[in-house]
Length: 342
Length: 93
Image (cartoon, chains in turn purple, red):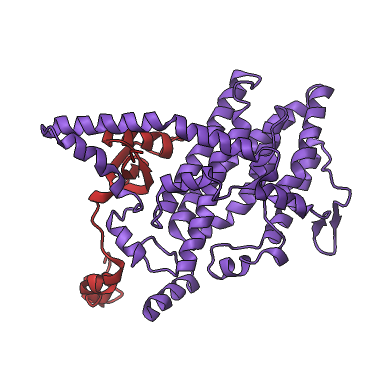
């Protein structure tokens, strides 16, 4: 055990990646599973606020863009579930935990999308904040997570740019359109800042996650970076961010900004946001309504396998073979599970 | 609930390059695994060819025996070109 632990510590110290079948402390594995699952759930739940606008997008062009974006969110969720499975968990189990409220997702998706301008503001601010958070995670110490983040970050850039371009278009439109944009910015600004999590002095897990190089920067560092990035973008867009305390501090070389209402973040995380029940309800319904599809495809596969082998009872065996492979992944095969629990 | 088996996905990003492991997915059978892989891992022309294989069919080295398993190549420095001293004035070598 001591040798394995030393090997793990040395891997982290030398900035090498931890890979699925390596020995790792249980705390590291549990932290990674929690973080990756929470991230995956956020992508999947994150399809909903914008998905609601697909049928109401104002043109075919905007509809195609929004559809592609929401598909990307689904894809990001699946990359991340794939990474989580390399740690020996099963993604069906993670989905159950989400719809039973036993695992969380980003608080930002519990806010409603009241107008089409919200689609633009989500792309600009919410995806902008996500990019700030995620770019350093491309160097996270757990290999499969870091690789998933690289794919995701490449695609997020499209998300942010389409949002900003949408807002530029609206700001160049009528006064009514401009006021929709201002209203959306007012509603999404503070929740976007909350996406970075509690302040450093109230984030007990940060130190350990930084030591393990799961996280590379603290919540407050990333939040500051996001504010500094966003201020000039707001100016170019011609909108005012809803914070009277927001101003450049030449001494610090950063923008100062107002106090965040942490009680709101706590409230939304603990389930009392505007849309929590709706988001989980929609996800649960999609899972339950899709059960027949999963069963039909499995039955079809079992029949086809039986026909191929010509054995009448092969169908039954093929139908039950499915569950056994879960939890390995990353090129490791079923043997990985032995490694994962060793 | 019937669980779909896990597949590993390998993508050749362009002609002339090897297939590279990109991740995994669940699918009912080989055919749908390929389609899911296309939808999930090549939404932006990332591939010209895809392989999928059931994860349980992959045999891998064990991390516990990593060092002994690869030991046979550890002490054979003479397999590398730098092992051989050649005078500087010999051209094209």
